[in-house]
Image (cartoon, rainbow, N blue to C red; front, top):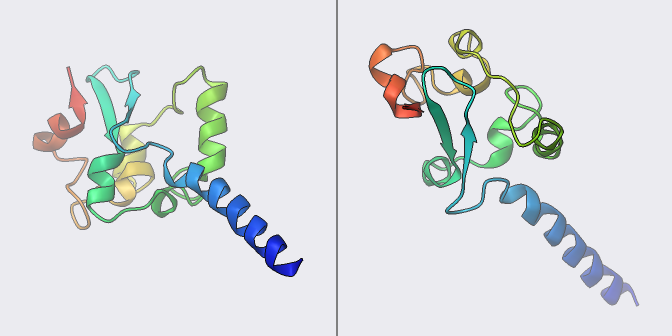
Amino acid sequence: MKTKLLILLVIIMSITFMGTAFAVPKGKTLEFKHSKEGVVTFSGDIHAAKGNKCPDCHNGTSFPKVGDAKKEIEANGGVPADLKMADMKAGKACGTCHNGTKAFASDKKENCVKCHKK
């Protein structure tokens, strides 16, 4: 009886965490279309290839936790919350890593085209 319960618990936990691990699944992207500088496309593949995992950013400080982020996007008709460059320059959101130390600096003009595509 305990073995069956343990197996069931492992299956339920696996299914639960699989959804958060693939918030932007392999081969998929998330587009931020509200920038006048051009569409910003977030690629889970690129960030995962660098060794990042969803909770690295979606920890409730840089961005909402994974489940909360999904709810926020759904509530806004598929559009993520408004991200501002001023926030990134202040070390928030993407700027937490894209500061020129861990990843390319988001506040350097020559790097704009790495994210913004017209």
